[in-house]
Image 1: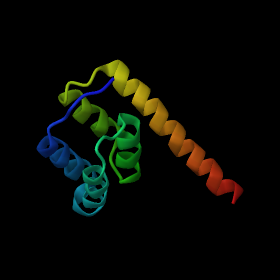
Image 2: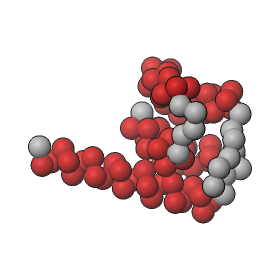
Image 3: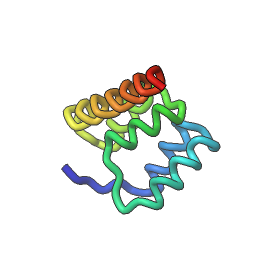
Length: 90
């Protein structure tokens, strides 16, 4: 599923969730891409220090369906877990 999100709204959400320093780094990545997968955005928000429940709340405000959010969270958490497992084996 594709959807467009107002850039200003996305910027304010990222800064609110991650703070100015981590948020600026994430926004640089988002701005350099023509599209960003929701699971990838959630992954980067969580790595940027965002609270998972706050991420959920903000995505709901953007009127993203709960099923799309759930699928994206599953992908993001899986990526985080794989990264943690890779660190253990190194």
